[in-house]
Image 1 (cartoon, rainbow, N blue to C red):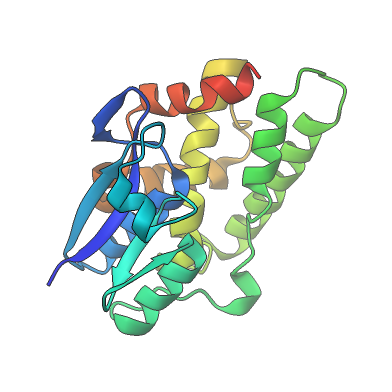
Image 2 (tube, rainbow, N blue to C red; image 1 turned 60 degrees about the horizontal axis):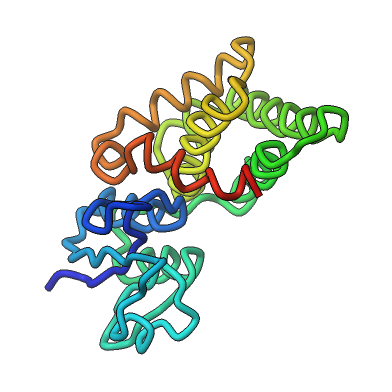
Length: 212
């Protein structure tokens, strides 16, 4: 039986998959484990009543396990791992926080109006730390095989590439070859191609935050 999962619909296009990186992380996990699922696209600016009943906070992603709706991508991916252990995707604890500060640094830099506030430098430092880890242990965070930490990072790196490219004409430095190869590797996976939002929806999703 297919799992029911609620994810964000695209901004301005309620019947198209939207740009939430946490929703994509859950979809990537389901795809990599070949678990059948039924996707409900939720228009976050006009949430349907039935959705608010199953997710009172109105947040996505939520997924239904045994008649119970569960929120939070961290919790969801953990339950998927326990219920569907094959193929195993858990990341060893010592690597599970690799790259974990990149998304926060990216958002800060994206919203920054002051070029001297250190936000660009902080993002460069986080990117460099990821570069060094991948150089030593790659091509994925845990070596040869993809694992949960990669599925969490992939959507965030995609947002970083699209949004910073569009709003700030800023790319990750070419000298970070391991990071660039890692992104190519992630973005070319079938699971990623199938679950990613189109670039224009990523841009539309960030627009109000950048102009705030």
